[in-house]
Length: 79
Image (cartoon, rainbow, N blue to C red):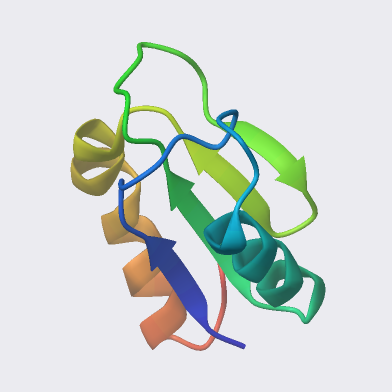
């Protein structure tokens, strides 16, 4: 399954729209989805559902967490 990074164009908690629905359905289909909130906050990432995580500080996440996920994906496993 794919790892999907949704760009920070809307916050997860803001009015549920098509991007929210699409990312939720992709996670339910087995993909790992990281939904970047537009508003940057110093909060822990928020698991919404199995395989769907809201990332509150995408710049920090890309620097600190993404490299290990990318490495795991290239080795055939997900971290």
